Length: 327
Image (cartoon, rainbow, N blue to C red):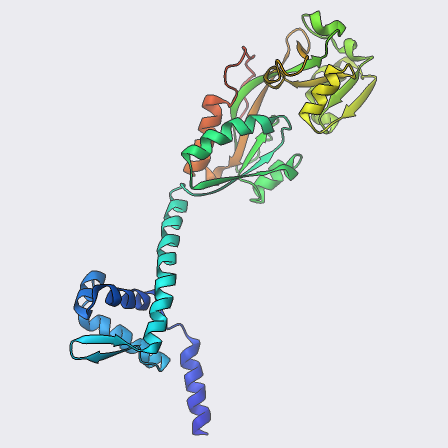
C-alpha cells in the first residue's frame, strides 16, 4: 500500500509542469560563466535564488543535476543531458520570441494574396520583386482558387489581401484603389477595327470574343458594353492563359477584351492592337481589399503603398481616371 501511495504521489508530482525555461538558462549560464556567482549576476538573480531554483527542480524530478567539489560545480550525467537540451532549445525560444515581436510589430509573416483578376498575375510579379527585397522576413503566397470568392476568403481569414477590379464593400473590409486602367478591345493584324478610333457594340456581332474563363456577369465587355446595347458576339471562347489569348487574336481567330497596359506590355512580341471600347472607353481600377482589423500591419500596408505608388506598370501610356470607389 505504501508503494502504491508513493507511486501515486510521484505521478502526481510529475504530472504538473516543473521544467521551466529559467532552469535551462541557469545551466547554460553556469556552463558559460564558470561559477554560480557569475551565472547569477548574468541572469540578474541572487546566488541563493539560483541555487534554490535548481534544488527545487532536483527534488521535483528526483534527480541530481550537479555536485559541488569545493568551489567548483560538476554536472552529473543528468545535468549534462539537460545542458544539451538547454543548448538546443533556449536559442530556439529566443529566436521564436524575436519572430513573435516582429509579428507584433507587423514586420514578419506571410502575406496571402487572393486574385480576382486574371491578367493581374503579371502585374503582381512586378510588385512582388521590389516588395520581397524590402521585406526579407515576409513571404508572399498567391491563392488562385479564390478567383470568384475573394470576399468570403477575406472574412474566413484564408487570405489577407484581395486583388480585384470589382470591390464589394462590406462592413469589416476596406478597399483601396491602387491603379487605373482602360479595358480595351484587342484585334490582330489586318482587322477592320485596327484603324478605328473606337469599337462600337455592333462591331462585335460577327466576332469570336475571347475572354478569360470568368462568368459573363463579371466581364466588363458584356456588362458595360455589349449587354446595354443588346448585342451578343457570334461566339464566346474562354481561354485561361494570356499568351494563348493574344496568340489567337494575332492569328485572326477572334478578338479579346483586356487591360490596355497588358496589351502594351506585349508590344514587339505579338502583332496585336488595342482599340477603345466605345467613344468614351471603359475606365477601371484595380483595388486591394483587406480586413479592417489588419489595417495596422506594416508589411500589408507597405505592399499597398508600393502597389499604389508604382502600380507595377512602369512607364505607361495615359490612362483614363476611373470614378472614385465608394467607402
